Structures are given as C-alpha cells and as structure tokens.
Amino acid sequence: MKNLTLKSEVLVYEDRSELPEDIANLLAKAEEAATRAYAQYSHFQVGAALLLNNGVVVTGSNQENAVYPCGLCAERTAAFSASSLYPEVPFHTLAITAINPVEPLKEPVSPCGSCRQVLYEYEQKFNQPIEVILSGQVGPVYRFRCVADLLPYTFHAGFLP
Ligand code: THU
Image (cartoon, rainbow, N blue to C red):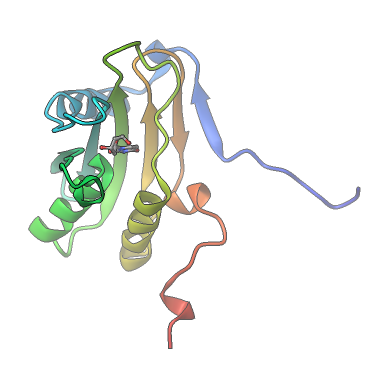
C-alpha cells in the first residue's frame, strides 16, 4: 500500500517520573477530585481537572443517580462547570483519572463518547486545542494534543442547517 500513513496521536509516558511538573500537578488535582465522586452505584470514581487559559483549575467528579442515566461523568461535570463559571475563557488542558476500589486501575481511563463530543464543542467554540491527559492509578499516562484526535469524523455544528 502506497501513500498511506497510520499515525499514532498519543504521547505515552511509561514512567510517571518523566511527566512535566505542570502536568503532574494537574493530574494530582484530578486524583483529588476523584475522591469527591458520588459513585455509590458503580463504585468507579473518576476525577477531572480542567486548566483554563486564565490559570484557574476547575475540577469535576462523576455524579451518579438511582436513575442511572441521570448521572454525569467527571469530564462533563468539569466542562459544564467551567463553561458556566467562565463562559469566555478557553479550555487549555484536561487531566482525567479514576479510582477502581477493587483493584488499582493499570491503564489510562478512557473518556466516553458523549464526553468527547462535549469537549470537542468547546475546542471548536474557542478554536483552541484542548490537551488531554489520561491516567490510571498506576502504569502509563497518555497525552493527546487535542480532543479532535480522540474523536475522528466528529459530528459538528457545520452539519446543521
Ligand atoms: N465515568 C466517568 O465519569 N468518566 C469516564 O471517563 C468513564 C466513566 C463514570 C460514569 C459512571 O459514573 C462510572 O464512571 C461508571 O461508568
């Protein structure tokens, strides 16, 4: 096959000691946020820390409900909170991690499709890539340049009439 390239869009830190300090600090805030999850049904605690262009970090954790679909993921909790508090401030970097109370999570948590779609909206709104950092409790940390890399062939406002 000619003229075909398959590019991996992720930077993998196999060793956490290699993480730049600002990324490690943001991840620590996501870890803290995960401890504030309301996850009494899944017992899977997710934390997100969103650094805005103004330097403010807005955190979120998953919020569950007895009516399961009413719950919200950590990423959307953080994104909606940030957009409500600072509607005109672009999102710079989002760090996400999770706590599995049964066995430490060995691979980076993977944001669901709905969260990717929501984050993509803000990437488009501000015309600025949102860096995404994904982590488990141990093991590698993934770093993506932008949400678009996590959601190819995205539905976007351009399709709408
Ligand atoms: N969850 C998140 O908050 N973010 C993710 O990236 C994956 C899943 C939450 C939703 C639900 O409260 C629990 O984790 C189990 O799916």
